[in-house]
Image (tube, rainbow, N blue to C red; front, side, top):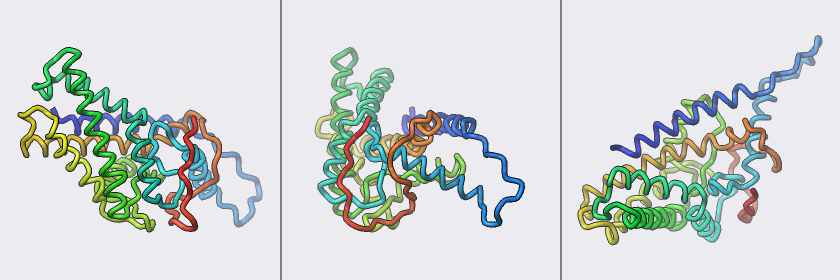
Length: 267
């Protein structure tokens, strides 16, 4: 079973529904005045409000997804290290680890671990170790070496298919520390290095190049699905009307001024 494809399809279905819910809950536009001023542009105003509302949500740093960008400025190496730690213990990581171990247990993947609580514990531990090493290589080490911003920047543009395509494209394209776009070397290399390292503690039958690249492909599939969830995360909160705090920012803002300190998590 291709778990990566399954995760991508599930993420797509969930957030097409979220897009529909958000659209239904949008407030109706007010009636236009009988003699509108010639410079009135209601459509762009509505678009600007959407940007402002979304960044109000992102201004409160997400605990579930700590890598959702809440400011345009780049991160220094220390902040990337802190983000690696935050992502490694984030609820999204713990949930994905537990779910992955459960699916692996049900389908008896990594059969060398066996079944029962002992087998589940081994699957859970190996999943946590591989996830943490992926974050170390991708969020901190390679992002610092290649000068890439390890955060996820929500697009806010286009319809659902455009946004889904944007989320998937983040596998190979990402934001640089200079504010431009570049090849996502950390995102592509980190899971490969992590899966290679995993061969030191996985069952012997998993320690082949074929198995390693298979796990690498599955991890990329899960990353694509997770990116779609991140893309729609602010939309979900906006539809639930949980949006306060923070100034309006544009997603295409280039880094300028001093590097901001890592914001404190807020619930």
